[in-house]
Image 1 (cartoon, rainbow, N blue to C red):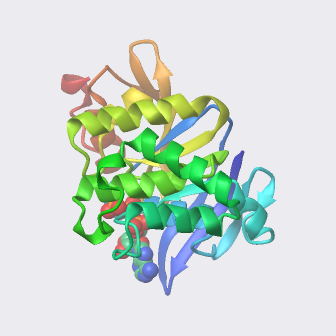
Image 2: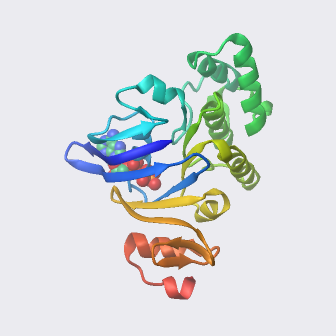
Length: 250
Ligand SMILES: Nc1ncnc2c1ncn2[C@@H]1O[C@H](COP(=O)(O)OP(=O)(O)OP(=O)(O)O)[C@@H](O)[C@H]1O
């Protein structure tokens, strides 16, 4: 459902994404891991059409994001990093506005907003300006707008950032519950999250794919390396920095 080929994104002379290729099939939750500045958000912005690639291609459900942007974007829900824009709107007003932009009728809007609000538990703050909400609630507003139109592809940039432990758990359950008929990409720095919710993972560094991993007997396997349950941190350090404490930690 997502097909990325030799994606390159440069900012001036700086190369943020350097020849990244991967595909994501329906039913997959792909974890996107990497140190700060690795190029995760830039890759996600390019998949969602917020940034144009310098070279390479991105297609979503068979539609090239540059050549058929409306068809591609219709099928994508995107949670960007940070808080939703329009801080003076209330979640109710913001979500209704997004549903309107997505082309829904009044009846569809009412139903879609109510469904998303229930799924991310926003009911308590529906009529409070977004700028006055806590970080976790702002994040939930962002999540609600991403799932509003029940898209086939979800691109979620650090979806549990700022959430309390209960909400983290709930959002992971929500992602898992939506996974069967969607292709979902999440970026995260929380490695337990990968074990909890992902079916595949990519580690990227300096704009390149360094390793691809999947659950295997004994933990998660990235090439020849296997991380025991709860010990993906050592493997992450090894892959991204060359540190060799994998043996004692794995
Ligand atoms: N608009 C821009 N102009 C110039 N450089 C940029 C721009 N956007 C991102 N970069 C640079 O590209 C690199 C990749 O940034 P990106 O935000 O994709 O990293 P990331 O992996 O998402 O990091 P983090 O884990 O900190 O969110 C960084 O060095 C960043 O400073």
